Image 1 (spheres, rainbow, N blue to C red):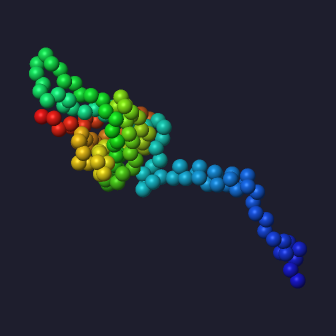
Image 2 (tube, rainbow, N blue to C red):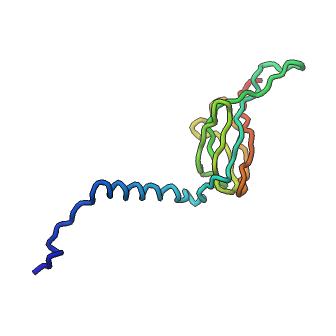
Amino acid sequence: MPSEGARRKARPLPVAAGIALALLTLSSCGSVARLGVPSPTPDSGIEGTTQASPTCPIVMPGNPCPPRAISATVAVLDHGGQEVTRFTSAADGSFRVALAPGAYTLSQPASSSHVLPLLKPASVTVVAGRYTSVVLDFDTGIR
């Protein structure tokens, strides 16, 4: 004959307990390293600006033609060429992205790699405890 405890039906978790368990599970996902890349820390990464140039069809002495700030999407690739993350700079070209220390290549995402303006890939090294400054120059194709 089954014991008293064996005859009891399992009771569903109260809704609040179920939600708390789900949130705890999801919050732990953010600390897992992706593709073998260490999780970024808020004290290291890259910062800088995205700009487009040339912006004038004819450049003459006394008539400067400075680069102009642009909002652009940039892919961050690890040393093996795998995308770690991507970001879009602000309208004024500024960006700041937390990354774990290591060597990275900044390039245009594959989906837009043939669209002007074009970004020449740039290599950056992120050092622990600091942000590496970089200016990403997109070629407008104007000659």
